[in-house]
Length: 208
Image (cartoon, rainbow, N blue to C red; front, side):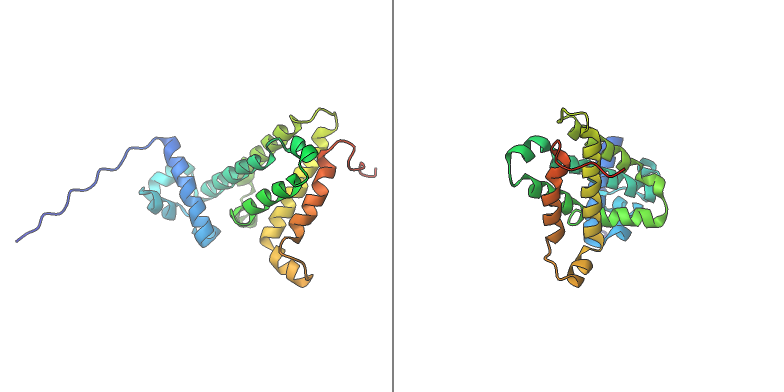
């Protein structure tokens, strides 16, 4: 006897913003599970129950998807800097806490691998969301300081943190092994230097 197929489940209608949020969450899972090569429009579509064409419509291209994912990751880093100036003045453990959060985002969160993938692909224009997020991060920290030199110091601090965390995520394990250093050697070094950048009069100006 012929058995009738179960009725097809009606797809839930989602707004563009919902699709982007779900797509980015799926892309992050794919990144952590399979590396940057796994972050494709087809894979994201399969994860969230949408066609390749629909995902393409919301992100523009595979590079656009990767860029948006990188931007969302950098925005997440802003949480590591909440009240950073006050914390550095009152909490001796704050520099290491901040370093751990940033390094974890680049390493365990996959931002380091994804940034390297975007840069090596040559699609540097797709780092635009990263630039916007980094600038927003600098502005947020500068807003917590009152001295005139805060802007330059904070930019230098964010540069040091970001490059340190990125390098540690991409090549850190190999270099640490070559130099017989502990797994957290770079985090410890950054934590010791960071207060000098963010507290007024802490680090001497660069030689002219």
